Image (cartoon, rainbow, N blue to C red; front, side, top):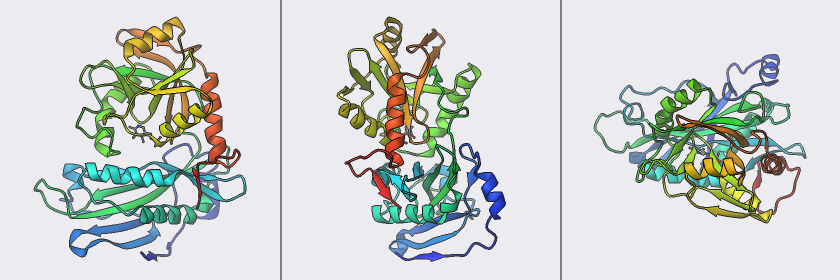
Length: 359
Ligand SMILES: *Cc1c(COP(=O)(O)O)cnc(C)c1O
């Protein structure tokens, strides 16, 4: 598909752009451009691919995304490579997962090559927005919304696929600090048969009240238990978990449909196995978490995701009390795995799996 290029009438002036990317933090410093591709069932599918200025999207007030939440997204990053170029980390996995989310939300799939082309075009166009700081990256947010105007309940026939970019330094303010976790007992994120494995906005909307509860209790993030027994640890609002044990085993909750299949999770499983550790995908209960933290059997708990890479969990708080993981600080495995992953992503360490893809 040919992309139509619309020249930006008033790009951000050089000095304003440079000032904005000195320490952009996370989620606020948007680049000047976006890519859009439209979909219409009656026009035979995807059409009108455009690279143009980042601007508001006009939607009819009856657009079904506004009423019935047909929406999916991805989160990925572009990194400056050691040789001066730009790279993506396992972008085909994001394309594949985007389509898996689309199927669950009764939305059309987008050809993987078109998804990747759109992402690469957006990243190339924003090359001068890459923060020069250590840990700087472009966070890429591809998403799709149902744009057809109607109020009956059925899958829409028209959609819009969009890619925007945000210049990023650190996801958590203050760099790599152990996070404090709040155990939600009143709320669940996902139930069996629900949409927990799809990257869809509704899962996040449902997590906001428990997340606010976490903040009220002096914690940074909320951890969700399974919806049926309220016993098994599933994941954080947007990160997967690993439990590193003294006997050399590592446990991560299995993908049963209620957990988002993280690409960082999958990468960590592979890297930990290469370290000679035994990684098991099996259920881990909140009681086991507390007992093993208290007995010292549990050395570390790692939270992982694209935005924050690998972050140690320091303490876990619930209405039943609080427990500390290890020393409550940054454990060996957390810093080792974080460094390995970051080095691979920046081309400072070789990898043989084709994870790093040039833009
Ligand atoms: C995106 C996401 C993750 C992490 O996935 P990555 O591919 O590693 O970034 C974990 N949990 C949830 C709920 C997510 O939405």
